[in-house]
Amino acid sequence: MAAKIIENQVVIFFAFRAEETEQVLNFSRAAADGAQFVKEVERLSGQRLTNCYQCGKCTAGCPLAFSMDLMPHQVIRLIQLGLREEALDNRAVWLCSTCATCSTRCPRNVDLAGLMDALRIMARREGRTGKGAGAALFHHIFLDSVRRHGRAHELGIGLKHNLRTGKLFKDSDLARGLLVRGRLRFRPSRIKGAAEVSRIFAEVKRVEEGK
Image (spheres, rainbow, N blue to C red):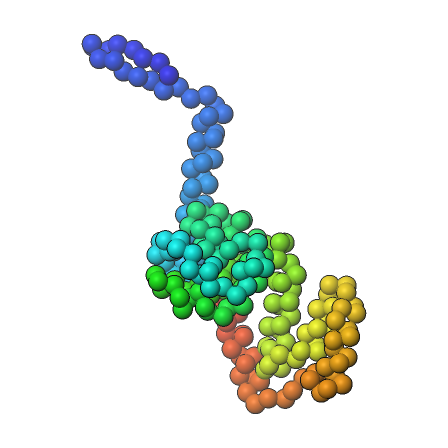
């Protein structure tokens, strides 16, 4: 910083080094990227994130909060701050069961369950499932089973998940007992309207891809 006297007035000049200028520019780009991320999430989820004032009621009522690496209200705060990587690459997004307890109890009417759905869509698009890879895989296998059969085929889901994770005999004792008692079926159940369910999945995929 330097000062000069021009016509009896003190004028202060600020001189930035090249690396300081670069830091300012990087900060500006990061702020712009963060604002864009917030807009993307709001557009996809239909939620207004500024409504959330971090009361924590969603976390207090979440039945799966004990197993999450981030609490539900923390996920919203990360989005508000425009932290794309942190908001998308975590286990909490994939462990959410969409029970909607948080959405029902929110005093600001933020549909956090719908917000989590939007984050899962964005995470899959960008390949950001690292920290929640196991839960993301199960999520994909489960939905694929419903898409193909109209409802979940539990035995098929378990077998495919074990094959994909390399744990071939995981829960095999439990499965054997369920098979003996007739609680698991070897073949998927035939239901009415299976084709309609598949069409719903196709329509959702079209909307997600913006077609």
